[in-house]
Amino acid sequence: MEKFDYNKIKNPVMKDKEVNLRDPACYLKDGIIYVFFTIHNLKDGTVCIGMTKTYDFIEFDEIKIISPIGYASPGNIIKVENKWFLCYQQYKKFPHYLCYSYTYDFENYSPPKKFFNTDKTNKWNEDGRTIDPYIVENNGVYYCFYIGSNRWLKGNGYNMIGMAKSYDFENWRDISKDNPIIGVNYNWEEPDGNENNCVIKVGEKWVMLYSASLTYQKIAYAESYDLLDWNKRCLCDVPIIKESELRFGAPFIIEGLSNNGEYYMIYMGEDKNNRTSFILLKSYDLIHWS
Image (cartoon, rainbow, N blue to C red; front, side, top):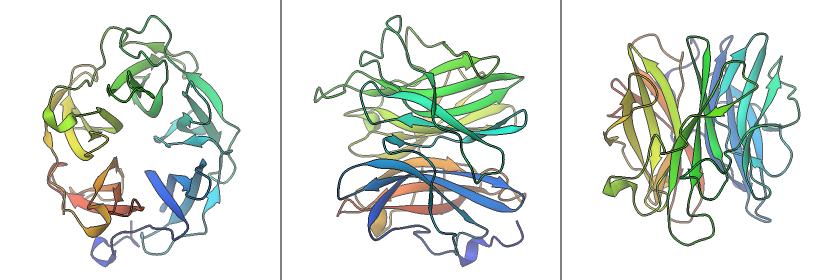
């Protein structure tokens, strides 16, 4: 990335005066960084998915809306044959479910298509809703991480992370029916659980960063060698700035941005006035960020 120079950026890299920007996701193609996110309208509470382009995280194209109202939380872009798929969630009416749009040119996107929700055979997703998808491919098989819950409109309970599997990107099978793959067993995941995960391959292992706790949100680190069994290592060491004083999460690792051993993470910070923005940090180990 010739035009990207981390030393020249200024955090937060994205913030809007009129709306809240949430849930960042990026895809690097032909030297262009495509940035996807939720646009939360503060006046009427509606959400939709927006997109912009940048070369350097300093100058951005005009924001383009690419989904109808009621869709949110872009997970990631994954290429399947000759199309690129953006996964996200339907959030307009209950039950929420996972869907995607595809594109050939990163300018025009198909209408949302539902591809997954759990059913009554799932023992832990009591609310029967799924949000926050993130899809990876391993040896020709697709794995979709999703968030289920037992807390919707109840005042207590948890968000937890499950997984679905597909061999053709069309038919998805829930493979975490008995238990979530990321539950709640550390005090930093209390009082309401986890969401917004990002998963990348690092050598022989997989690394997951996720939002730990909704109320006191921080970013946590876990690792796995088979995508199913995860070892939660720690909370990430993330510096707090005024734009993330209240909480921060929704991490996304931008793959391909550097070939020099650095990792770059874009994530959402929330200030004391409940205004959100995007922050970009660098790391050499995915745990310590600066």
